[in-house]
Length: 56
Image (cartoon, rainbow, N blue to C red):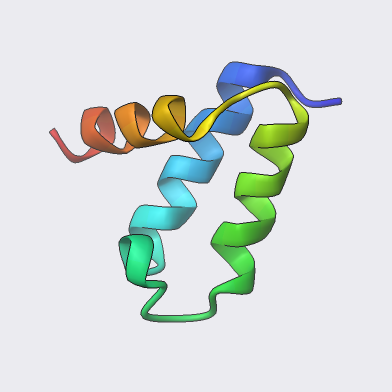
């Protein structure tokens, strides 16, 4: 199982790279990253917070 923080960072990065919540490109890429983050114990609030941090 991947490290939780790394999985959250990856999920946020992929979501931002692929059009955010609207998935403007291939939706499978960010969704797979989000699944890995959830499997590592993360929740959607943690991913959203990391997306804000990476944008900033």
